[in-house]
Every structure is written in structure tokens, then in C-alpha cells.
Image 1 (cartoon, rainbow over the protein chains, first blue to last red):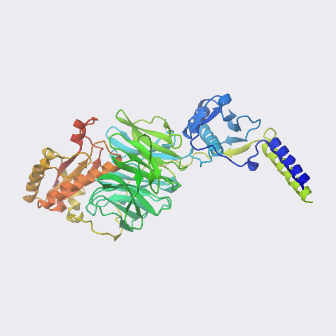
Image 2 (cartoon, each protein chain N blue to C red):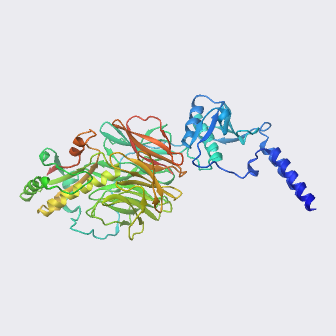
Image 3 (cartoon, rainbow over the protein chains, first blue to last red):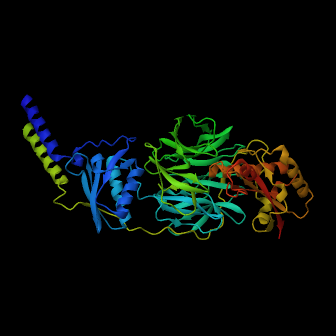
Length: 386
Length: 199
């Protein structure tokens, strides 16, 4: 028996030494979420290098020299992108891959997605889009861009006022409020055909549409009953249901990922976070500690269901994150209007600079912030397609 | 036999691993990036509002004024001419983060009420609620609407037909002063009143 085990042990040792790091045989241990990972990037230039450096730093990595790095990114870019990832102190790369087709920036983003999957184990976000409200002069329009602020497309040309957008699942379209013809209406905007239809144009305010993650319903703020209250309707415009009946202003709905609950802002003294079932019933305050004494607004429920990000303050604002069921809120960085990326780790938010608003990306566990590429105009109310 | 099996499995694993890590001899796995697909289309037009069916409403508590679109639709939906100067002096102001009508503003609302009580031309009034920049944008939109509704309720209680009173909100999007101190903020926390005369 003993000999058998000894033989087994010896073989395992040989196998372990000779295979270095074959993915199938290694239990994946991802770096602790809060650990700022030193990483080096060599072999690339211009766009590829800058895309990799930006993307990896968005996910809490710090670009450094190869001798100080825990991971080394290498490869080449002759016609197509070839990249590999190596853990420091090992002879062989964890893997090597090539990226063909599309633009060189897209290839670099795909490579960065693979690196992040290996090191962080989080879902890819570097080929996703964000939509936001952009003000230039006195008019505001809806625009969309890559998550890093590149490839901006202006989607409305009404020369009027719009409110921040909400994506339909899968990025098929957007819902937003447009002020036109003496009133404001909630529109559904199909992004493949460009066609728009009025989703809600009731007497009084029609504000803040939020499409449910299953794409079947829309939460919104209507004042048709005499006060700005939370309502929900079917995506086809029917089946309207009033969920709150307060005298004060309700605002800022966000859906739970299972599309069953809505978190929103309701005043009881200060503005605070409440929850209600999307099919109606009693509203319940989200019990939070660490954020007393000022307004809590603009909640956004993380796609994994675990967290609520929201804005603390009035005048000066702080991005906060708390467990979705309530508990201790963490104040993270200065800014407002947070929205989670599909990875439930990254947040896009807006900060105020001199008479202008700028979109920024926050890596929640490491609290690192990066501005997206400079976009002309004042950009706010970002929504991440997910 | 057990040993042979074990050794066989390990050898297989080693061979497999060597194959998988042998990057030098094989072309690397290639990820194909799709060409960027159909570009998102900018918006065009809009269709008639689909008001949908209201399946459940519960009346709000308190002294709510119904927001029926009743007989004011033609006046407010393209049937009227707007005049923002007539009541410019009657703009009312609010405290920070509040939609309560202040005692100092009541005489302006009384003036407006008197105008509409004696009004035989069936003119209407658009009440536009605004906020200072010290709130997040969607919160300010709801607060602005609440401020407009506060004035509407006040005027209705003074006897003005609520069908003539339409509310709107601009949140913090239409400041009269873009400064970032209280002297600017207090001018922005306001309801503006726009007279609408039938065409």
C-alpha cells in the first residue's frame, strides 16, 4: 500500500512540475477582489497598448514593469493581435491567443476581457456600451458610446430636453423622457430601426422609465394621480399599475435582477431608499447604516442582485454601495448617479467639474476611478447596457 | 491493475497538458472579433400616444386634485398660444429641497387665482416646477413636479378650475442663474407660470 501511494505521489509531483500551468489541471484561484494587481504590458504599441492599460486599470490592476508584476501580458500586433498571459516566476504562459477581424481596438478589448477573466474571474465588460444624457448649449440629447467613451453616437436630434436613458435588455433599444410640444413623454427608441413610439404620454409628469431586466415591464414616475408616484406598465404600454400613493415626490426606480422588486426613492423626512413588489403591496424602507443625515437618491441594483449603489448627499455627492437587503453602506468616492456594469463590480457614474459633468468608471473593491475619454458637452445619467 | 489504471490516467493527463501548453508548435487559439454590426439608428418621428389600460389605481390620500386631461387637452396640446411674460412677476420660490408654499409667496398665488376666477376666455396656466442643482437629476425632476403640483393644489383650493392648470417639471435643467452658491440656487428653486390663450 505504502509503495502505491509513494509511486502515486512521485508521479503527481513530476506531472505538476512538467505541466507548469495547464488550465484544466489548475484550481483557479482568482486574486482577492480588493488586491491591486501589478501587471506588465510588453510587445504592443499605440492603440493596443493604451486599450490594454486602460481596461486593466479599470478592473483594479496597476501597470508596472515586468520585474515588479504579478502577471505579464505579452504578444505582438502584426496584422492581427497575438497575446499571451504569464504569471510571474513561471516559464510558460497560462495561455496564448490570437484575435482576428474587427478593429484593432476591438481586438485589444477582447484580449483584455480574456486577461480579466483569468485574473479576476469576472464577466467581460470591455465590449459593452453605455448611454447617457449629453448637454451642449441649451439642448440635451441622448448619446451612446463604448464603455470607455470611444465611438460616440448621438441618438436624438430634437434640440430639446431629454432625461437620462434606460436600456432594454441586450441593448436593443432605449427608453427616455423627451420634452416636446409643450409636455414631456416617455419614448421607446428602437436602435436597429431608429423608430420611436410614445410609451407614456399621460396628463402630468411622465418621468424616469426603467425597463425590467426580463424586458417585460417598465417602471416609471407618473403624476396623473395628483402626485409624482411610482407606476409600472407592460412593455407594450398596457397593464398600468400604481405602486405608491404618497403625497411627496417619489423618484429614481431601479429593478431587482429577477424583475420582481423595485427599489426607488421616497421621502420620509429625508429622501431615502424603499422597495416594493412590482405586482403591488406595501413599501418597505431599505435599512441602512452609515448614511444618516442627507438624501439618498439614484439607486441602481447590481445585476448579481447583491448590491445597491446610490448617491448620498445634496450639493456635494458621494457614491455609496450597500448590501441590497440593507446593512452598512460604504461611502466610496465623490460623484453621483451610479450604474453597475454587467460584471457587478465596475460602476459608471458622473462627477461635476467646472460647469460640466464628466463620466467616470469606478472599480468598487479597489475604489480606483478613471474618467472615460473626454466627450464634448456635459455628460450625465449614464446607463450601462446589460 | 489499479496501478496500471492510475499510471495510464496520469500519463494521459500529462500528454494532454503538454499538448495544451505547447504554444510554440501550434497556432494559438484564435478569437474572431465580429465587425461592428448595424449602427444604432438615431430617432425619427414618434407615433400617437398609446395610453394603455389602467388596470388598478388607488386614489392618493389627502386632498388630491384629479389630473384628468378632460377638456383642457386642446388648449394645452397645440390649441393655445403661450405667454411667459404675463405672469413673470408671479414666479414663486421654495426653500431648499422643499415643495411647501411659503407664506411670502401666497399673495402671488392669490393674484393668479383672482385672474383665473374672473376669466371668461377659458385661458389656461402652465405651472413649471424647477430646482437648484443640489439634487441628482431624476430626483430633481420629481421634486420639480411636486413643486408645480403644490401651486396647482393651492390655486384649485382658491377656486380655480384645475382643468385649466397644467403642471410640468424641468428639474434643474432650466436655471435662471448658473452660479453655484445660495444666491443663485434660491433663484432656481421656483415655479414659473405661463399663460395659455386659446388660438
